[in-house]
Length: 258
Image (cartoon, rainbow, N blue to C red; front, side, top):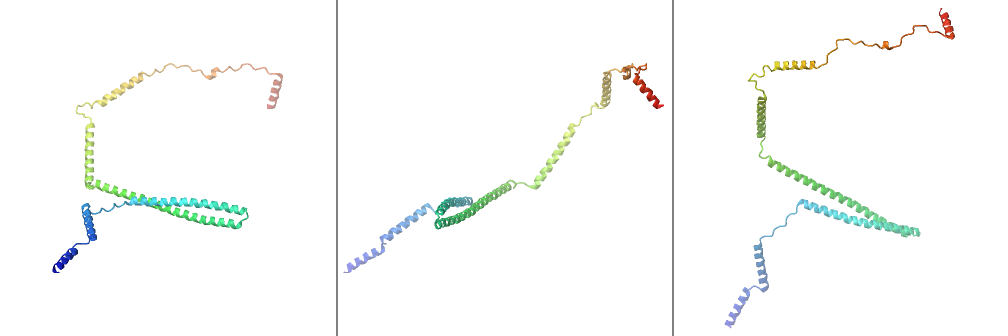
């Protein structure tokens, strides 16, 4: 009996120390998962989407919504036209009740179309605002980049050094101007220019005499000039004979004068 009790106690201790099959499998899997995670390292977070890309996606989504609303508006407008046609047909058949029913449906479609148009207008304004904001951001980013580039370029430039550089350049230019003036001044050390003025005056006088000698000579005899009066015919010397009528008229005029 004692041996049996010892055997039972030994079997019970062995069973109590061993974990259940299900728990052992789960623990083994967890150990494998941890080992695998430890081999691969921690999970890398997803890259953050740029703000510009998100803005473009949002604008594209709004445009897609506007297109869907436009399709629904076109469908409702067709339904409006159909209701109007049916209302006219019922009115021609003197079916007032049926015509009013179609007109009522047409009115409902009109209100829906008006609501869609207003919604599309609001969405289009939002798209315009988003695109304008995106353009503004691009401009600001470009200005910031330009500022950074300008700071990098002008980082090693000193204003005082630039001023000194300008002074040095101006001094060098003044020295060069003086050198040019000295070089361009003729050298009179040989005494060549002392008699040049007199020689030039004598040369001018000789040239003037040559010009005068080439002129034609003036005639010394006077050529008689024919007056235009000489070409006129001579006045008559005899008294012309008057006719009887002329003679009578002359006598009458003489009598009146006396």
